[in-house]
Image (cartoon, rainbow, N blue to C red):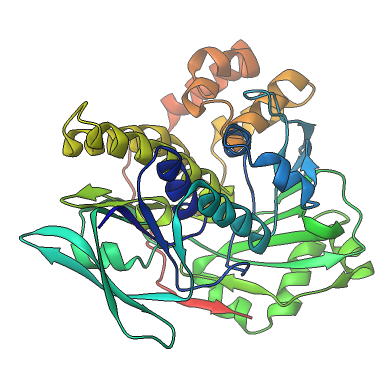
Length: 428
């Protein structure tokens, strides 16, 4: 009998297992993959997540993996280009974009070192329910007979298609349809200084340094153009990068070293992350479009919040269901502003007058530019950055008067927003 079984051993599951094992709990960590292995990812470990790696004693291992620190960033909208640095957050001033076969192996090894039992190549066949309460799992290692394992709580950290979530069927809320499609690949011989983000109408592009001197480039199109993109993946990908300043020229002068990887299966939803005998973390409980690169950070945050809740419940300081309800509340409060921002960006809607004025007014205000980059990475709270007081500092009285005049003259007509089409996961 385990205290906790964690299903899924990547960026949500391994930290959850590690932190629980460090508190002395008996933890079983299972995953259908073996490690090191790759998985589809945004790669970005934003500043708050880097701070967590440091707190967990794992940042030095990420740095030692030749994942370069990114301190500078360029945000290029065509007529407006912002350049700056990420602000300090808990002593951290850089994000990292490690390959997932590197990062996940570091996390898995840390869980095992903390005392968690790991079963790789383990397929969970069934989530066991007894008297309405999740009681354990039935599964098997590849090539072996099925076994049953019991636990006080089963944590689903197994992604958007979580078998735990499929079994318990939690309430879903804040749902939005897929809005964008995204593809990425890796290059060698591409010069880059820091991170690069580009917006060109209904196209979004990014470039970031990753392990072993490689550069990862990412492009996003509206989801309704998925099949058009798929008709010529390489041609459309390069054409998109060609619109991003010199980025197209630089990648063409370099060498693509891996295939294109992408998907249009990018839903946006919250799931209730707890119930009798079960909890959800990471993409299993909450997922948003990857266009803002928040997934790894969300997973790390969930791990800490969930472990705090489980420990509070197991130690008798509060009822477990009350502690898990608090986990849900804190997760939702911390995520919702970025969730709304992300889905707005992923909708490729034309910029509002407030947004145009904001970007125009940021030019030349270096401290505010750096805070803007801090907001994008989650280091500066979004409600704080977009507060009337802060916007007034950036836009000034004339800008605020333009916004007020525009809003007064704007027709008071409610319009519906077209829904994006559904697409499936694909790789090219």
